[in-house]
Length: 247
Length: 115
Image 1: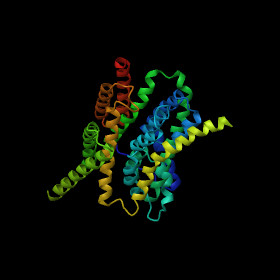
Image 2: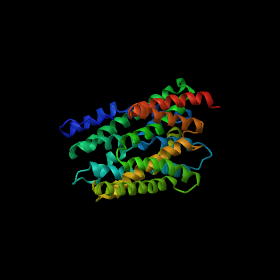
Image 3: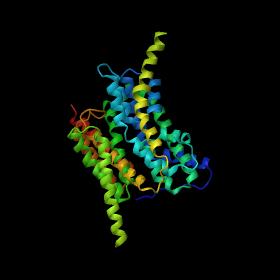
Image 4: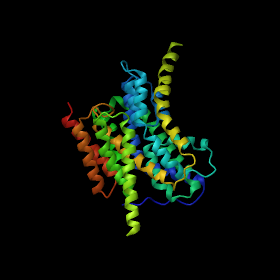
């Protein structure tokens, strides 16, 4: 397994630039480009303007939620139902923000210093931040996250427009392939970052419990999947640690 | 004038029904995290919850008959995800290899099996 490269020592500007570079060479640059070409083309299909499509990427920055919004704005769907579906699809942001912020913030940070990195937070940025930030001096972590977030969000916004204007020349298969890149990149990048039993167990449990709860039509199934799967994984992690401590 | 209004409609809808219900989770996360430090056991637990929830999101995307991936047959999605994950493992945990193999499989599968 290739280890994450160490950041160069230096100023916060260096950390920000290192973030930009990390994003540009990350597999997520490819994932974001592909996803947002698909999203841009889809907005064209639904008769929305290119400015609207780009604004959606800047403001929402959440692939599945954007697709749900676009399909839900059509006639015949209640807007409030669409808003609920958008919101339910984005619950993942709550735990990823809670898991990341204590790792990156400085002691005297004001909450509004964190508004920008929190808005940038998406699975792609989170995966790169969790991978690199622990190896960096604390004062460089926020600028690093801002670099990764700004680079990927800019790529996403630009390629939303590219996809919008390419809509006519894209093969029909492209839309399906663009949507599939979200789950396959979530799966492999989460597996790559899962070094501890804690994360491996959480991944496996989430994959098992999620479909079971969805199939049983439990309300807020994603929330319960996270809480139940995460708690079981945490329990396993504690048992494992106390055993290896005794041995 | 009416062009401005009809353009304002979708933007207002984006903010009210797209941006706000989405952004609320990021902001709630930011509020909840005050006073917690990275060594606290709650943060370790939340990391497990985040990972399990992500796994739930991707399982839902792969299995749901509605939603963003509904144009691809479920069998094709699951098969391509399994192939992609196998390629990821074979290529010594390369995310790029997994994504490429999964994408190739889903395109081929959709081409062959989608009506």
